[in-house]
Structures are given as C-alpha cells and as structure tokens.
Image (cartoon, rainbow, N blue to C red; front, side):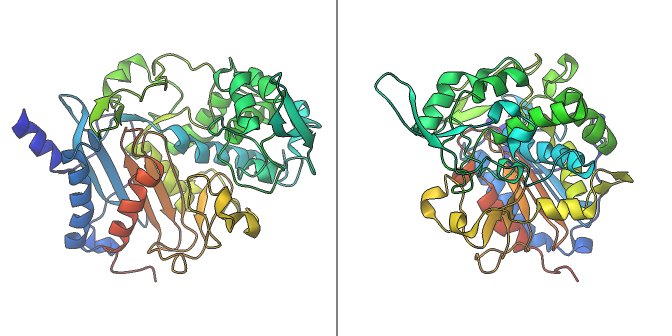
Length: 429
C-alpha cells in the first residue's frame, strides 16, 4: 500500500476525457499556450508535497488558457484506497456563490431588478430592518434604525449588514438562534432572517454572510421556478455541466471525493471537523443553498469558469453579455471599507484588491504585489476548492480538494497562483 500511495502522490496527467458525461474543454500543449513546462513542475511539486505531507488526501488541478486545457493533473486518492480520478465529485461549498451570482445577473439582464434597488423591494419581509447594537439581559436584541435600507448592490458584495453566524457579534448570535441556516426551504429561511437585525450599518463593512442564500431566494421568486431548476435550465444544461447540482444521484455516489479535516496536531482525519454536519449527498438538502450547496467536478466547474473568461459564452451557449461579466468583475466595495483592516474578516482586502458581484477581484495586481492580471476574479469553498479567472491573460485555473483545514489563508490559492504565473512566459499580446 505504501508503494501505491507513493505513486498516487506523484501526480498524474489526465488529458483524456473523463468517464462521466461531463464535456471537457479542448486541449493544447503548455508551450503552445505560453507556459514553460519545466516551470510548471514547481506547481506539481507543491501539490505532490501537499498529499505526501498529509495536508490533503488527494487533489485535482486544471489549468487552461485561450479556452484550451494546458493540463489537468491528479494527485493522491479520492477516498482511502480509491485513486483520484478526473470525474471525482466534490462538495464545492462557497464556490456555489459565483454560480448564484451568474443566475442573478441573468435576471438582471432581463430587467427583473436593478443594483441600487433596496432589497426590500423584492423581499418585503426585510422592510424596516434594524441594526443590532447588543443583546439585553433577557436575550432580546438592542437595535438602532438602519441609516439606509440594504441595496441589491450591497447584497451581492457582502456589505449589506447581513451575517453568517461566524462571529460573536449580537447580530450573528441572533442569526444562529433563529435557525435560519437550518431552514426548511428558502421561504422559511427568509422568514427566519427577517426577524434578525443586521450586524452593522449597510455599506460600512465587508462581512461574509448569508446574502448569497438570500440571492438564491430572489432567483426563485423573480424567475417563478425553483432555484435548482433555474440553475439547471439556464446555466448547467447550456454549459453541459452534467455533474453539477444540489444532490449526487445514487448512481454517481461512488465518485464522491472523501472529506477530511486536520486535528490540532495536524493529522489528517476523515470526515468534517467536530461540530460540522456533513449531510447525505444523495438526499435533497433542507434548502437549496445559493451560498454553499452545490456539488461539482473539475471539468464542470472549468466550463463555468471558462464561460466567464470568454465574456459570457461557451461553445455557442450565451449565458451573459460581455458587459454583464465586466460588471460582475468591477469593484463595488467603498474605498474606506477596503482600507479598514478591522473589516477584512479572513480575506485580504486593500485598495488594490476588492470585491465585485459575488466574486473577489484583483484591481491592480502589481501594486498588490501579485503576478496575475488586473481584473482577476476568484473564490474558494469551505472544503478547500478554489478557482480564478484572469481575463487579462485569458487564464482559468480550478483546484479541487476536500479538507476543511485548507480554505482561506491556509488554502492552496495563495500557493498555486504565483506558481502558475511564474510559468507563464508569454503574456497576452
């Protein structure tokens, strides 16, 4: 078994089409797309080390340029005793958020809503929502009026005042107590959230939040169809994302990648960390979470990312107009918020790195000390999945792992991004 594990850690090229119904992007050699093969080995070395050191059980990476896959690589195991294969299915958690954002922008293009509309225009339950300033001795919220109603722009940029229950602030404690995160359906989630005051005055902070779950409800309400069905009909089917959805069919369950976490000693252990539930992937969720509910594969998500890189279209399927993708990739967070270190949560924001509509955004890469192109859009998932789209260099990267300890600053995005760009020796003309 040690010999087999060592071979799996070495990294395997997976340029052939996967066995599933997924439709991979076309391929090209690294040299033809401007990458130095010897320099890309630094990327592979980092991923092999991650497996051999027990940081993850296995991984998949895909690098594409000009719409063609330069390479797709496999490392380690998808589950104990099962080699990682390209058709493995992953819990992508918050990488659901950009998909929800695209769904919202489809409806934006249809004139169903505007960026500076108050959220309460479409969700009356949020009318006259207040801001929490504390909790009294009886456990009741102490509030003050909101200086302005949260807008759709703020909802899509995590600046509207909503919480996620991750902090010890009054609003977050009340959100947890409301049971909104365990709601039975999106209408129930909204009803519970409407009873909870905001964490802060809208527009004054960036705080990761359930606002994208609220967007899922809006997609459902504005389109007149269930959220998951809208995603299937308007995004997944046109883009031929055959293995993406809120459940994993029983026939595909054997392809599901195992989830891990690291304990206090750094040891790799199976399952979610203590206190975090891991729902049955084959059963419908309690509600279809626009903020973190999707399952997907390397090739499916690469097709979604390539659609963004190709300005809203892929293989003749037009999802968004070029200007709409540009709008998603334009910073909407006020400069004062970006420059305040107390409001950064776990992301690194600055006047050079901001946030668009459901996507993090690099505005000035060189000023930020980074190698990617200006306008690079990205996000990650709680179990360590990550991706970015670089319109300036026409580069797409998708990485898939399943370890809750490998997200955010401890994740692979800050490691792999410079390793990709040090190998890009022919920049875009």
